[in-house]
Length: 473
Image (tube, rainbow, N blue to C red; front, side, top):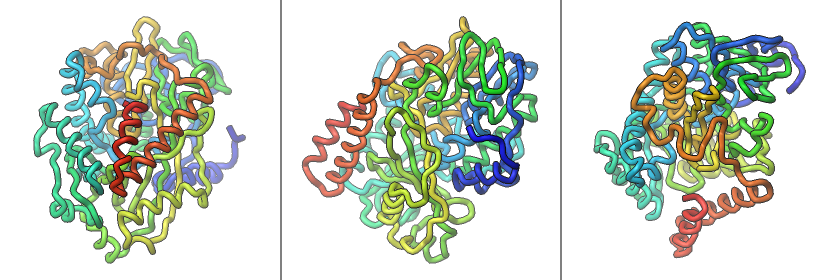
């Protein structure tokens, strides 16, 4: 961690992390760090969405609780300040739980809770008095070839099997799709109503201010190096708490003994300058949908409130679970992301890119997100969202608060809560290197080969898709 510098330096340092942080009103100076010894009823490690939402709901249901938040940098520094800005009802793992008769009923409840979470984010942002550019215009998915269209129909079938109808999700024919998003060569796609686009860093920073106003103690620039038996150690001090909750997602490996618990996989993003009227007309975007195509190497985009395109793609896993929070502007990965944007919208080729950045998201070894709490040892965690964390973190925060306070709610009886084989702190570990690096990069290569084969209409696409199903069921 760098030595303390002037306030101007810190503000510029954090603004350089992403377009979203750069556009946050006011200054980004860190709050005071933890110094000396102190105690709390509940300690939360990590001031991203999961930690902030958990603190919000703990104070909502139990205002008397002394809640302390510990953050290694500033609130919103991680994925909460770098993501694509979709707050959606999508959640990894639902197909798995829906297919199992033992968890099917819980999967239906979980999906309905995720739908409610999208509205809850908008409600709380209004209640707390900050404008995170919330716009619930829905999500548009693009199918550029027959394989992608088949996967879109499979997604629709899953939602139908869980009791959702056309008002929630539906197939779009090319003509209907063209009225929302103008992309050459599209075969069709889908529309999902339960998705809002947001300015993600404003959401994180607004939540941080709101929980502090409710009495939460937020210590920034206080990286936790070790946690055991209700005692949390930072370079400047020690915090003892009856309950300790881990909300570090992709940064979990920075804690002693946790290096293989959550694997960080990186995404990269670009933002264009403000689109000219002609360029905006060429995209067909008249509303702020979240959108992306059906590639295995996922792409995602939105039209920002001030008329830019924010666009990203899933990236790499680095040896030893290395974390990258800074990318050079000339990094070749951004050429790839820009190429994907130009492929979808050739008319934007002359529109400059003003910001480019990247950062990690967390993947649990089960390949599904989880919310875990053990009341006997007073420890819990949530994470492993696989890129769906904006909406999922809200639901996870509400659920962790329910578990800590022993509130009897339907959320507690969903299959991502205390799933078999997981403990607090995160249980199942990833394989050691080089197996972890080989596995992730083999999968990444297979995704690229499958995408290329699908786009070219080659028969080998089926073989690559079979292989990926074996690697990533």
